[in-house]
Image 1 (cartoon, rainbow over the protein chains, first blue to last red):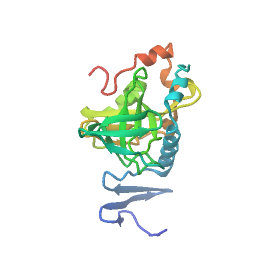
Image 2: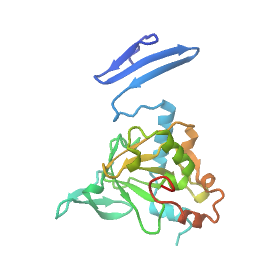
Image 3: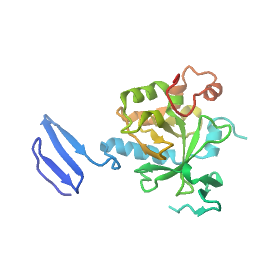
Image 4: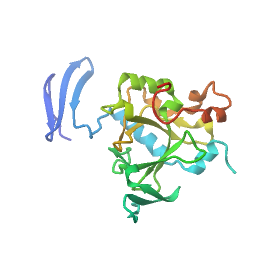
Length: 74
Length: 176
């Protein structure tokens, strides 16, 4: 992993069109601004992980499972 | 993951999709929606069709046009959680989508019965049918919103079967 040291208001550029700005550092928290093309989703890691897990679980759906849930099993 | 066999059918504009759960289906090419970024962790699969089947309303299927086995059961967020949907709408959290033509689907995680099913209210799939473009948008809110128990949303709706039958159409705020 590339490790860089930055101060508030300094930036990191990834490729041509992704910019990461350190907005402020207060206490134990860092505020980060990210500008990226719209087709690149940007998420907090724990949220992204939760969505991945949920999508993967949701992908097990089937018409049979829906019928069972709705109590329409034959 | 195997690739869906897509054949150009005679007459143009129609594609034949082989699916695991719905058999072989003919789909108008214009019905294929591109979901930008896919649905993580299936990020490389971006082409989906919406299948609305008889007797299953308000539930619809988001079927991959590329992976025969990949399908998600969804319901319009307006139907399941109108207050939540309205808040999203009003807050304009749709990341550049034109609201008037945007539909919002919440994905469901099926379980043993209706009361243990969960609904993903944190990350609806929003799409514009006319542009055939969509995205899974992650809204602000608690992570647990992605596992909202369906029973919480159905509270006060008795009996459940009737309540589901009365749910509102796929898009648009109620009363508009």
